[in-house]
Image (cartoon, rainbow, N blue to C red; front, side):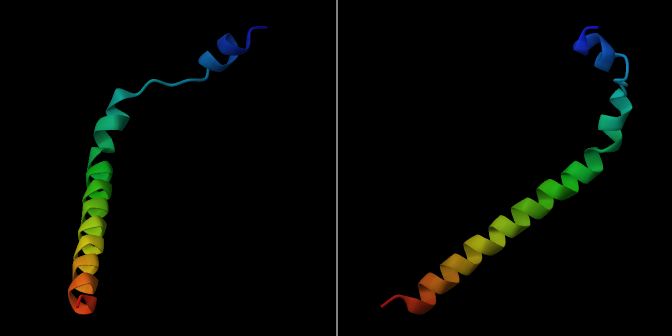
Length: 52
């Protein structure tokens, strides 16, 4: 048998699952931006404290 036809039968297409998960993806992106901001601020602070 063909491998693709065997696996395609078990694939379930649910577009509402994407819409339901948008809030989790948004929170994840927000956390990523906050962490990047903290890293930037920490780098600026270290540069300020240890610059001549």
